[in-house]
Length: 330
Image 1: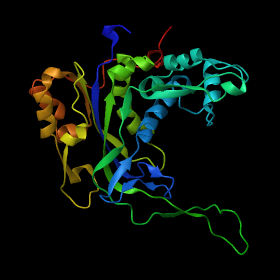
Image 2: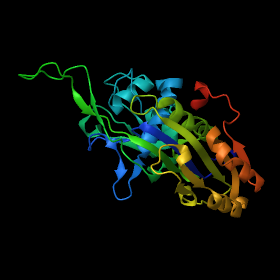
Image 3: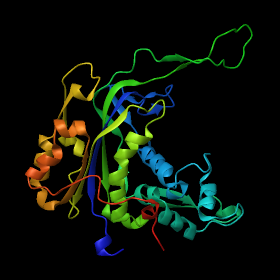
Image 4: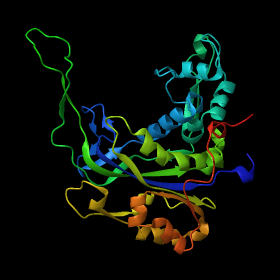
């Protein structure tokens, strides 16, 4: 990879809302939304966020574009996924060259990394894998305010469960846990050093910029996820190895109306973030930013940064994303 193609270091701040839905259920707790019980803040794993992106890319560009995806609508083992991807039969050996092919074809592997099985049919070769640490990583997200679970989570179905002696006429009863409202913030990084491990391109990062916030808006349409909406995606791209770290520490949140039930019930403060960026603007190459209409009308963060001499690139980027762009051509 030439110096001109190197991916620069970046910090990412991503804020989206989840209204009357389950942002990330905990299978160990009746699929309740994940909650920090001490603060009643809503927690969302980085795996959930990446799944939005993977699902959206798979639906839009096909299974060939994503490593961690279903095959023909079914969950499969990683070795079968690799064989399908590279066109090998069940008994064929899997080699490191096949793993490299995953990096060329699958944008999620280049972004987030991958563990890919290799090895032959011999007993000693089974279980071998090659691991590529991802240059793009996110922490767990958390709500910027305390949340509340809905008061009545019990739901019923017209269909009966397994018939038991003496049961007549009742459908199944289950739980449907949701939060009333949660404004969730994620922090992410793009590592220039680790980008070499997966062959990550600047173009791949631009595709992430364009599609991550769209994936939250457009993939979250299942029954438990509908109610998601992205408000702010911001990637701060640096000139050198400098980093501000977790950008959420520069964001204030004041609850204006309690209980919180909408975006208008909280007041966000970005003065500390703007001041930090202005202070280090000589180290900043550009700020790539997406704002929802509601966010722009209320906070106008992109315009504030521009007025303070920051190079701002408003999303979407001026690129026509298609399936060919997701693949590294040989």
